[in-house]
Image 1 (cartoon, one colour):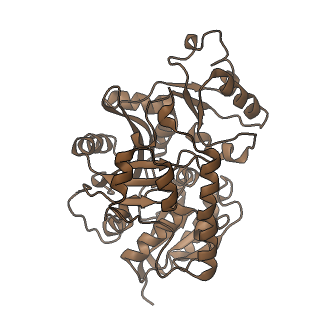
Image 2 (spheres, helix red, strand yellow):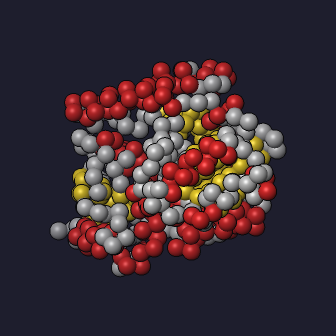
Image 3 (cartoon, one colour):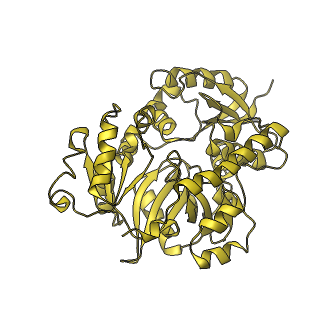
Length: 416
């Protein structure tokens, strides 16, 4: 029996995983992706877009390599090429660290473990930014025994090169350890107006057993709409093949989702595209990138926060703009077809929350008017994949957003 051309193997079960499966099915309707995860989250439940395999402890270092290798060996009997797409930081890290163990069974490439560590370690990453002339926020990295000392001084300026308010988050290399710890007020990203607020959180964190590093950064003025996200795809030779810029119009605020984007307008920026393309190609980048930055109105420059070597939960905004990132990957890796680089200039609206939330919580009058021109594309509402049980769960999922925003929202643009 002749083997089929390829199989996408998607690692994870969140909105990102569902959006990835949807992109494959739109471009290649005859292909049924395989989703591998530890448990199915709401975004992927009751879906017909993929097959699902649940493996206990799949995200753990001691389980992942052998478990994935077993899946790859099995699938390689029926498919010529296997594409593996990680949908979280920890799956990406596991793939980069263990890539050589998979016996050449994965057709697509990932960045080196060394480059991944550079991105995950803020002092190394910002040294790289310095080398290539990219702006970045003033930052301090606090080891576990420095969390209190870093701010507990008569004058915080004696220790920090910036004053409050500040932004605080765990370093990416400790993301999974952080998720496994629990303490009161735990968030993915914190915003603190005062030293006292910061120290209260740290004392709670210290009792949780979390021993990873913390990143403390200056707060760049501006609300959600000052943020920017740039998604790109670099082929297996390291040449950038697509870039799509997005302007978030609203972020999430509940503790589990804070720092993720709830709605994005796709944009174009030729100068930014040129600058970031030169950077990515100079460092030998391959695969997908998700680059978070913020426009600093004080300097007129983009301040780079981080590069995630994967697509993120909000990356379906590229599809709203007409770019299918999974088709670009497949055409490159499976069929060896490469066209000219796509630089998005289209404006389109992607949203992961109901329109009523955008109407109420997007604060910019100009953006509120602009959004009225566009029908939002939603990742999870997919025609042909609306079984009653799925519709019921999604309806409850979206309805809960009203309660979350009412409870947690605050206007970051008013922070000083």
